[in-house]
Length: 328
Image (cartoon, rainbow, N blue to C red; front, side):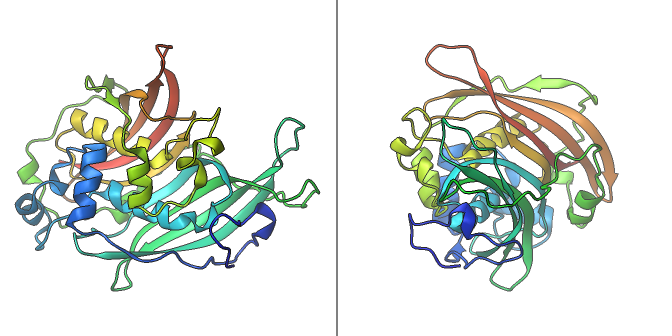
């Protein structure tokens, strides 16, 4: 499928099983790393210090924050979402390989399911597109694998007959896929002793943060979704902040609560429960759901809830995120 910028693809243009034409490859160099850090301020230690990264991984070179790797892959996957209304969820995100500063990423996007949304007289027709996304480095090695579901515009009012089952949130937490993806040869000792956090306990990041520089992250990752660039296409005439931006700030808050975090191995799910706009003030709360020992440490499963406060109103929920973290 080839569509000029701003001219689709519409919902009717997708076919289950098709692989979309790829976006340009992106090299994640020091400039990209610095720009991302300025926007999200993530204190993940392994991505801030090259000597620490080398001590932990046993390999030379600085490590790219796993959230930035995901941001790039999401941006490259927007070849499918130039007619997007919103991104509804991410599912089964797994970081399969550590990305080093200087690596180049290419992302392959495959259509896995289509479901027409119910027609309503107060809005244009739309439909759900389930996308399978795999990112590879410049040596052809898989580094990231996940699904995301986008709500996109339909070209016509006519029924399409597309009613695929797109799946949903897993009923039980299965740590096995994340244990398989976790690096087992890392030395986590430089991160310090295991941090005590009882299962079921919720902790809130005392540092609330303001959402700024949203278009910069969109441009940095080559995100082509128009509502993130053009306020007239957003909700209520306001430019919609890209959902990954909220996740990046959420990860920064989680790492402040868990400074011994080595990396985020993946996400079980991520639901955007409400829109985010620039200058919103967000707060992050994390609940530890489960712990599983691995060869060199522990996998910790969290539920992270983000709320946004705007215009003096009460905070509203905007993100429900379930990351899996490797830590001592």
